[in-house]
Length: 266
Image (tube, rainbow, N blue to C red; front, side, top):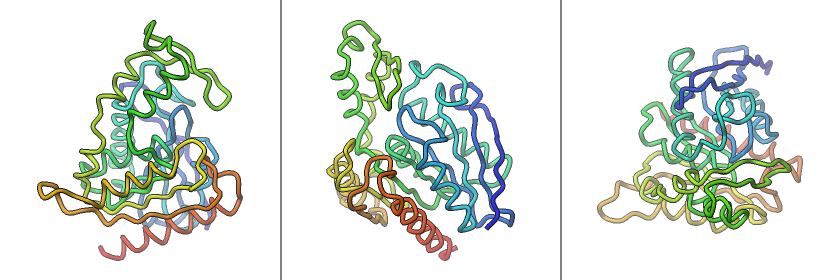
């Protein structure tokens, strides 16, 4: 299917201009969706590009965008946190609602997956969420960053090297990560979810997806009914899903079939 790609910009949840790319089929899309990238990544990371373009082949339109302070978006990364990520994702959803159509699906890689899960229940148009190698909480990242450079907490800021690049981290980011009760949000999520993770993920162990699955499917009496959650294990894949070329093709096909099935219920 022929693809049309447009560079777009919109005001993010933190009042900075955010840069995005909207990949669409030349025919009317089956649905629109938003792809949110991982911590310190951008919309141009291979998993975002390949999955986004691959879903266009199945008739879906995909908006991938840079969070505040990353890639081509304005702002300062050091001043961001999980709360600002949530605000930017809501802004991306709003952009599609105004200029195209409200998104019916959210996809997120790693930290972007957790962000997508945390907001899905409050978005009426969203019918399902897909996570790729997502963590089960935000607190683990605060602890990881603190261990990487104790100056962040001791002096209020410090630099860490992630993905071959140095990033300035302020203490406020760690404080924000630690104050989010993600488990509570997930226990309230009733929308279908598709969790994709590797047993060999070198960044986020398989225990993260098992905990996510448990929070989504095992509820207390006071909680709403569990979501229809599916767990797909990728053998021998890395965190970025780039170690084996067949992985991304499998991921795209799996997501497309899952989307098609949810749309069939309309």
